[in-house]
Image (cartoon, rainbow, N blue to C red; front, side, top):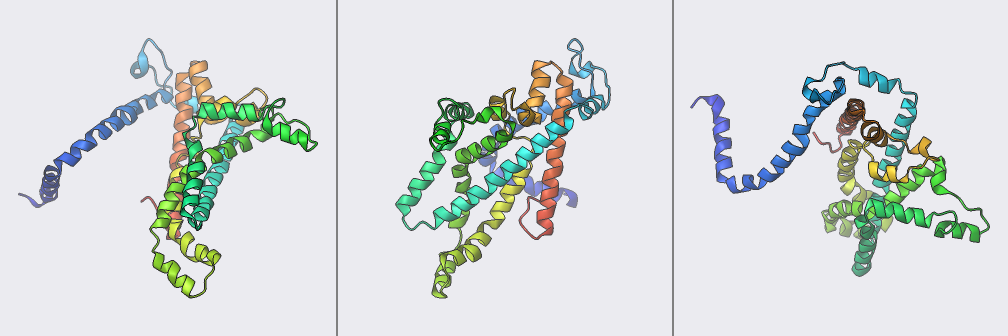
Length: 308
């Protein structure tokens, strides 16, 4: 057999020997093909003037007109700012808090108490977004909410959290931290469990304190994991949760709560501008791609862990 085909022959032998394992991959591969790759054909809608009678394929091409319309939209920069600022705020909080929480849990002397803290912090992850927003409305009600009751108890005035644009980002991000920080610590705790106990024993023999062991052993040990998580989260930085933002959105805080996902929903499904909404969504995806490539390149240049 010619040399160029030898590697393919070896690959075929490997597949044949592990055919049962490859069969397990078939449902996952089909899922991604059907629900992720086939719908990509609809991207062409962003460059067309959609006509329901003609369909996506036969609708006339109009080039970059939809993108130009979005760039010229009078609230373009406000929507971009809301999306980017909220995304980076959320990225920072959801990266730092689980990181610190994992370090603290790992240093707890009692394993029973450690497991109790893990369970308590992990439990909110199972609350649905709709229920979470409902809880926020109840607890932050200006008339009957527990938080405003505490504010009034200490002599303050009731605060309408969902009616103030300045409070939207804080409520959105820190409610998410409360809900997901316990889940985020799992990966860091797994990375901490891989650190050799011999390193800690040697450090203790040398007289190192807990703070010194955390600084020189634990943090460097889980830093590669943290960087990988940061890169992956950066790739989704513009795709912050639509459902939560939309449910928390009111006419009073819309100047801060209108982000790209909610704008795409309104333009596409409420105003029936499908081609325009596709263009905005495609722009969002391209920005995400550029961000993940940039962060990965920066991590690689600093000799840190990277995706490729």
